Amino acid sequence: MMKVLAVGGGGREHAAVEALYRSGAEIYSVMKNANPGIIKRSKKYALIKETDVDKVCEFAKECGVELAYVGPEAPLGAGLVDALEKIGVKCAAPTQAAARIETSKTFMRELVDKYKIDGNLGFASFSNAKDAEAYVKKIDHEIVVKPVGLTGGKGVKVQGEHLHSFEDIMEYINEIFEDNIGGAGVILEEKAVGEEFTQMAFCDGKKVVPMPLVQDHKRAYEGDQGPNTGGMGSYTDSNHLLPFINADERKAALKIIQSVIDAMAKEGCPYRGPIYGQFMLTVNGPKIIEFNARFGDPEAMNVLTTLETGFTEICQQMATGTLKDDIKFSNKATVCKYVVPEGYGVKSVSGKEISVDEKGIEDSGSVVYYANVDLKDGKLLTGTSRSIGVVGVGDTIDEAEQNCEKALKFVKCDHVFVRHDIGTKKLVQQRVTHMQQLRSA
Ligand code: AMP
Image 1 (cartoon, rainbow, N blue to C red):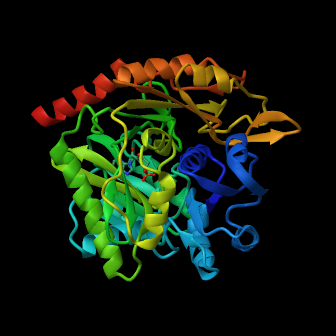
Image 2: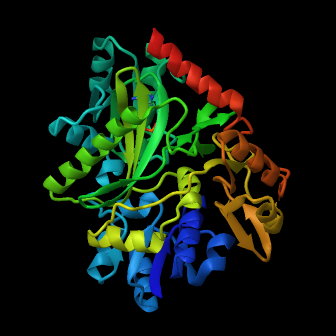
């Protein structure tokens, strides 16, 4: 049995741990919250901060793990992979230098620019508000304002959606500098118009093997209203495309990812591990919104639920540069909805008791993943981030959505909410119609 270290305590990590477990790994996990789903599958676990590199390495040594899977971005940015590799643990995750594809939005845009990779957007980064102001005055297109560093997917503001005037834009830019949000300055990007999709892939430093396409829902409230969040839910289709995107457009996105992987190898920081490409499908093809140096969360819950090839083997191959092409996912659609604490996206109400009838969910044919919940004195309590992910599976998106809703009834708490519109016929059709309108304009 392969001894595998799993780092992280969210829904994405629970999904990864399940996939490792069913492919025969012996799991040793570290996380900061006591995630009951991960604990159940672990031979041993430690409750430590995932970014405490020394402590995580100590635990890895003590357990004699051979391979590591790292879920969240913060430990990647803190250099956990570099430290683990130094003590002889192979990692299915990128080094600190390779993780810059996510941890520095400027690094990513400059790399794509340097290697003339398709899909880039106009951008400029600034280390002070005055220069940013001069740029905003000069340009003649709409922009998106982003902190350069990590903000957990919540620091982005879009002109026309969150920012409605020059004053709004400058106020937010000033706030980023004054509060040091993200810690590395501001990047202003050209706004891309279209439908968003996620293409994730497994990488071994050279080779790229795709996962099914996913569409996430960043906005907190139904009808795509409210603040941006880490993601409220997501769906996949049985043919591994999405209803508004065709095979050629997907190919274009995969070509962009392969070009990025090639460029990183040339730059001396080869990329190993799952990579996440967020794209806007525009009438001129897919444009790069961002890359993440890991699975997306919730997207991981969709694709790992339908992964048929052994994940342990895939991780081993990613870590050792021996990735094989024949990775299989079942031809099922999935809909994932996150149960999140009241106030999530603005100010979460946490520490509330939540109950999950695992058997009820299982019997209904769906899958439940525990996320930012904490097992304390036998009680399951909500944290400040997303609580429980429920994945419905079906032959169509519609069927998967209905199954997800049936399963959600087995999660009980008075202080949570769910975006029930995710994966519904109505919302999916809106996306299709939006794209049709753009194409015919
Ligand atoms: P990010 O954290 O970079 O994924 O951004 C969060 C969300 O902001 C994305 O999911 C998009 O909806 C939106 N966004 C980010 N960058 C752009 C862009 N250049 N054009 C249009 N929308 C964007």
